[in-house]
Length: 312
Image 1 (cartoon, rainbow, N blue to C red):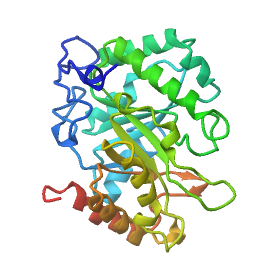
Image 2: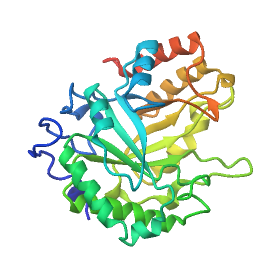
Image 3: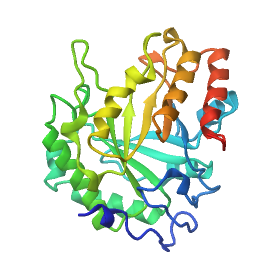
Image 4: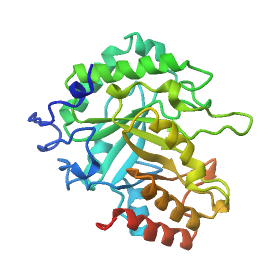
């Protein structure tokens, strides 16, 4: 399967959940997004995104936007492999003017079974429903696979099996005529320190015909950490594999790291490295990653606006 085949045929006319739209190529600049049929058009990048607790695109998103004065133009959420396609979260996000990013996690699923075609009935039906949905969505599968904390990741499932499963999923979607998906390969930052080193993601790379965007997850834990030290090595490793767009898909700063300063460093890093944008993880999980002070809320509104303003 060629990359051209994966992204071909970008205008569809199937009557579905929402009204008609001309879809952008999955590899195109985010500034070429033409619209979303579930409501107001999804604004183009650069992207300031968010992950919130609760229903995707629900009350927490509105509270975040109200507090910061930033209306995210990308909203990410998690879905379980094996569960049926649910268009409601994506449609709600699109209707609010943002692009949905769906992180599909194969918890309790053997990736070898996916690669060998034993989950094709599910995948084919899911792909058909996404095709009929017609609106643009970003899909990622098995994020942070170069870390050792998930069953599909490092030390648990071999990179070769992960790659085979990823390629098979994309192939099934392509065979079902799906053209409204941007495929995002999401890795964790490289970390050679500590008891559990996180290696370069190169061994898990599926190849350019199967990926449109690259996502990188990483968090500011200490005041001394900077964008260059946190994300730079991983960006350099990715650039040896592909020139695809890069999005910081999960990030935040702990209160002890100094949130206002790290937010400024984050937005500056996104600009300096020419990335698509970032997604703030606004959830209290293991520690509280939410914007925890008036200074942090103000900094987020001020610095994030430098990415979304027309002059950025």
